[in-house]
Length: 345
Image (tube, rainbow, N blue to C red; front, side):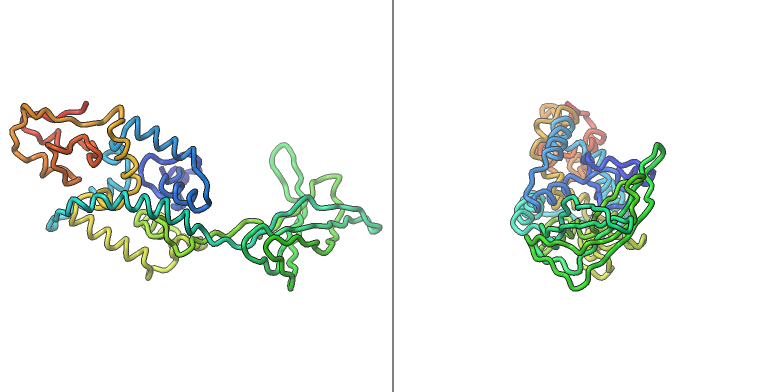
């Protein structure tokens, strides 16, 4: 899931487990992040939905037990010697609440704050008497806010068999010019050298991409402990620009949530999986349909010793709930059962 450290990226594919694609090394997308972002821009992520459905129907919550790196981290943390605690059963519904509110509903309602951004139709190019060319550009603000001091970049690009080569580049900033949302404006004519016979002239703007900032930060990724651990911390140490999503200061709510999660994972087995994981909530809904990995119990041969309950990382009443939506098919109960009445279907 982090093969981008070797230059391999598959960002159009959703990872089966919970792994933040904000991580500098991530090679696959996080389904939760894709769902939240798509909801914020009012689009339906068909590829992500179909990917998660396919994984759910094929393996169900087997993914949570064997593939999810965040689940693996919790297993490691819980092995640290300490008092262990149980949690009330009603808290397991928290992950469904997180899925509906912070992944779907609130991002859809509040969305992003978008800056103004420019659309550049094809410029008009004419030769002048000095042997150079005049470039006449029109820009249109298709964002939500005014663009102040717009910038244009004039580039000659030469294509050859080996690579694309930039043979000329000029950046021009137009001070004291403001373009309101929806406004179209003719920019001052710019004179550049005539290299049309050997290269293509391209006109672009660094303001042609919107800055998208979560409005009120009411969506899951802004406070996700996985994103903080695998994206914010590496991004901060690598001196990457703050995207507005990942906090650049260690003194922020994100890091407090991460600290609480780490301590809780030591004390309570799989606390995030049981209480807060939206991806686990999705998989649990379709767990009964899964073709592989389901666990069943033969109640006729069960001796009710209770060893399976003590071994379950999800805190289940195994004899009643094994193979159900909350079961991650880890197989710990299978391994510990003295009469071997629990097995995989």
